[in-house]
Amino acid sequence: MPERLKSLLVYAAKCVTGCLVVFIISKLIHYNDIGWCLISVMLVLSPDGKDAVALAMTRIKANALGAGVGAVCLLIAATNMWVMSLGLAMTLSLCYLFKLDAGIRSALAATIIILLHDSGKHLWDTALERILLVLAGCVLALLVTFAFHFSIKPGEKKVESQQEA
Image (cartoon, rainbow, N blue to C red; front, side):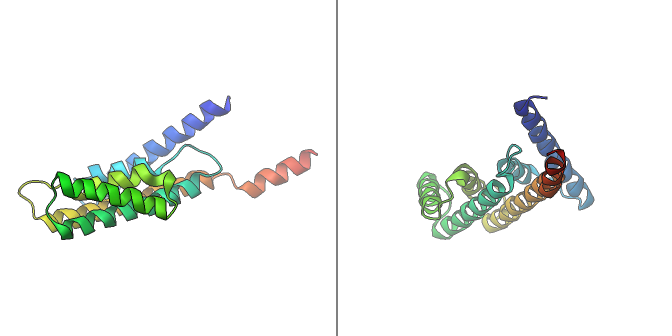
């Protein structure tokens, strides 16, 4: 099987697994507003590769940073185009400062998720709920990444290749 096709299939399996895990957990805890958690899972997952775990960790750090910036911006003022713009600029700057370039898109998405406010809901209830959903999505994506990344242990591959020699 070509390496590119194998990578695509593994990535598809990760995405489907992440989706199923979110849905199953939401049913178990009777919580239906899973959109932000699903988005976070998909933003953290990456195609199979040597750097899958490192990339997932970078994206999780970036998501946490973006969610934090969103929360800080809500302390400044209610969300409007200026607060959203400030939040995005702060997120970009902090990702650059902390060398989280590979997670910038995840961080920006997290900032937007936190700053968006549903009408009729309390601002901080919504923000805190979304922060928890983003972080839960990150943790679930990391668990899926670990499950796929460590299903074939690197040590086993080395042993097999040494026996062939």
